[in-house]
Image (cartoon, rainbow, N blue to C red):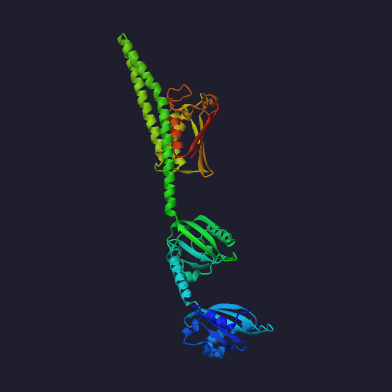
Length: 478
């Protein structure tokens, strides 16, 4: 049902900040009314009969004329634009004759939206302030990854001048460009975000200060109502302190777990190795108390002294073992295997000459190791002295040492052509305390026990291969 112009005027007059203009094909107003017209100090009657060019300034008329023309051409159009300091929302519609349906003119509905615009501008300004002064790192990218804006936190962190780097790809800017892998990860994240996905990952970058920082980065697509990606929102948070705290907590937890394991092992070893001498002392005390003559008492007393010395010796060894296993933070130094071997040869000069031993070393593949000097010297001394101690009668001792790198670790192999060990019988005892496998008066069964403790305390491993009368080979992984 068509709306009569008078009804339209009555309707518009009730709308605040609005005005309606009805015009013919010559842009001459046939009807004008509304609060906005009165606010300008005009009246509908004064405007009626005048053209667009007579009512508005030349600049405003030039701005409006294309939309008048569009309405006369049968189009409905709308736009927002300021006229002076006042913002208007303009809507243009064609008007047709009820008799023949021909376009006879048009209608413009103008609504004063200055208050809304100012409110929008205030909100926009607040958002810009929040963006600029946010503690987190923030950037706006085009869907292709080109920088549109970056807040103060990000600019200061990377030393950016926004005008100089605007429209550059973010992965080509400081912080990312120096490391191809870092740049590629960001580029991949941008591609995923441009495809509509939310991406979050951690990255280590170098700040303008030279410090390496760990960032928690996220990229989110900003979508239109039609789900078209308009821009990419990048957010970043410096989590370096948090990650270091986590690493410290993990290290502390691992250390506590390690210490607890060592204490459990110590308790097991202690109960196992002290029970025998303690029981022996108890039995000797009973024997001493029950002895009827001085000779038996003297014998029991001498055995008590031997057992006491052995018990003290065991306590010393166990204390050394616990100290080794607990002191994982012992200071390390860069050591040359050749120098440590030469020092060990000096300590064993008499034994080497007596046995006429031949020692051959090849450290060319891994000449250096970062290790506690006292530990490495002790390991060399124990392994070489064992090779000399358990040499095969009638065979010139040959000791070979070889080092190499493998999978990030230094390996050392020490082999001899001595008596060898029956591992089918003794494999579970080879590194035990006071475990000996040959009748050698100098054997104490302590060296390999401490060697294993020293190597494992620093995360290494030691293994052995041997056959009777075919020598022994120790394989150490540091």
